[in-house]
Length: 503
Image (tube, rainbow, N blue to C red):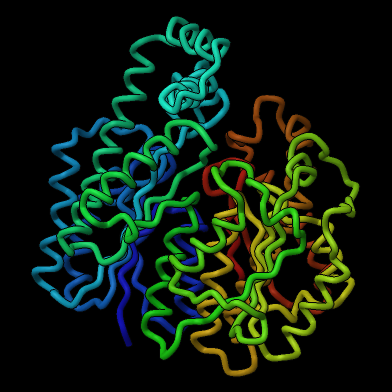
């Protein structure tokens, strides 16, 4: 069995547990960095310890999947906070050459984020000064990009000048200097691809927009790749936390007799052309990048496909639901035709095709209208894969990886571990994020007026108990025949995500 060594982006479930599941479902021998070497939120991972571990594990491996943000900075949050010099980072990156020297047949699949700049004040995952100046620092990137593209208005030019006066110079310099270091490290990854040290490279845009720091850097990095005659070889598209699973899918698809040919079906014709929140292009374009990066083929018709990826895309209306129209009401939106969609899904399933659902309509949660349809139509246990968490790209990468793992061992019945991961996704993305999280968050002040959604203080055990009770109610209602027992915790002591352990 081929050995795949996996260096995740950080220690959260999406980066650590999900790849474990994909490996087990596909029957792959996936070896992850030991938990004791990983970091914890703003505390970086043990970079030197991980390097020592990697050297030993890579000696007899066929594939190394490496998050360069873990390898260089100690994780995704440390990548936004570090003070490493370019020289230190280059020295670390050059270490990858040693792995190839010791094991020439080793394939190295890497991903390295273009650093984000959130469009809000708040220092939860950013430097301290982002608490007061975050939105203005974000806007500065948008305006600077528009200025370079000759798209800036006089009003925007005045806004840019005002920001330069309002944001302390040391704060803006710190932010821009770190971006410069990270940008040059992205360039050096392209160098390593040119030298044959890396065999495949994705440079995802983390939490981006149509204009700003990330798209500006993407254009410059693409130009740099062209100078190395790698213009068509580096993948640039929105994403972050799902990319490890994407590369794992690529490794799985590359070892099987045939990669899956995937047909894409959309619940909304107009939605295919919608730009999701936190991304810089229409979802229809990103879907194709995600499939190709995972090593899948793209089928022209459903009849010729091994698998069907059903995408529930965002629309102008659905993007309002996360923040503007947060109620208990479930909206049947006019731009979606779920009646027709479920009829097509029944056809795919009856043909024996893998059927996977990427629920991208609403950021950070399942589309409760879609899930109600699947529940009423008795399709929840008929599909092979589902996800509906965080950004559109996070969801897509997770579902495509699960789809790929299913295809690699497809032989009729779903494996128990695949069923478990499917239930895990329903419980987290629909149960917690779509049904429970908001209701419990609204009660936090009753538990303790000093805690809030981004910091549960010492009340995490009490909050966790309430969340578990609510999820058990959800399970009894929607999955009365399922006998899964589960436990959970809040990984970064906040409400944004949970870590579920199915027993």
